[in-house]
Image (cartoon, rainbow, N blue to C red; front, side, top):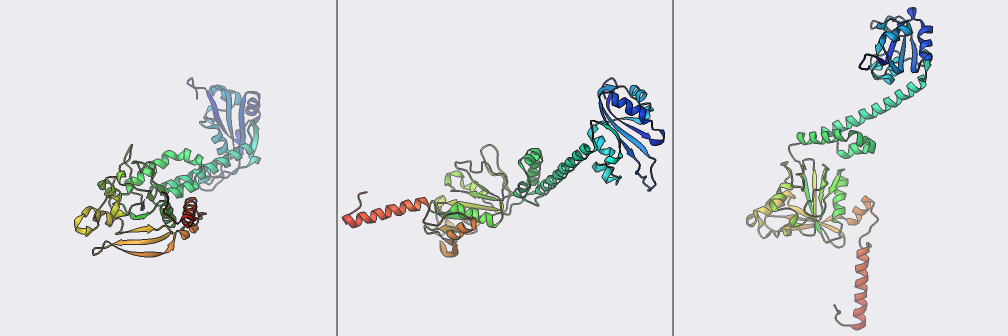
Length: 388
């Protein structure tokens, strides 16, 4: 409706016994407008008795007119003319194709109910309604997923698996709100920490990813530098890859690896909440007792700080040797550690992950093998010390 009271979008409703189609339709066909007229003869009241047969016309004028002008040209009393806010929605409602009409169990009309139309067809209205229903249904699915995510019932990966890039763009604000809500809900941390050590290239990071896959967790691999949590987005598994002692102070490391108490961890621009982390895996070329040059002789009494850290990693760590065998080292009160070999090695891990790699056949191993071969050849030739 314009400021001066004129209208462009309106609906006419007239009982069939008083209907004068030749006047209204003749006028609408002469002027610049879109309209569709539909006959309702199957509507029922709440008590189940039939309603009087009536006509609906949805109209969209090119130029706005006053209510009196429309009433005069259609030869219809003003009380039977109603202002319309959304023309396309009103067209759908005339056939009872909207969700509200279906909710009220109204009879759904088809193209045979059309008396007359101009620039609009039942097929167009039906197609748009189906597209809207599909979009609305899709919206409901995505919203329900996000509500479950916010309620900690599913993971971020479960949501993203069902979303397209367009869905994410549309509902990114809701996604963020649900992530914030998860933070409010999660107060305690239930996290397991695994420590993996071994020489560079032994497969520490690959083994960490294997553990995340086995647990069906999304994982985040830390970045280089001191801001190791830059990019973390509430994944259930954090892999602190190639952890160096200068990345955190001892106090920060204790806070980060605390298995039970939830607290934010330092990050460059703002602290990170890791309350959603269920599995933290630390990989390092250094064993736990060497990471901060902790003393290990009788560590229970000499270095209480290492005792705290050892407790956080379950009192043990995994070691991968240069042949891909994996050993579990366990800290003990009486001895520094005890050791046992596990019944699977990195070749089995590669197979499960579908990685085309066999121990000893990667590029670095081939280069080292070539060097060893050349060294042995020179030894046999000269039977002398190496020149380097």
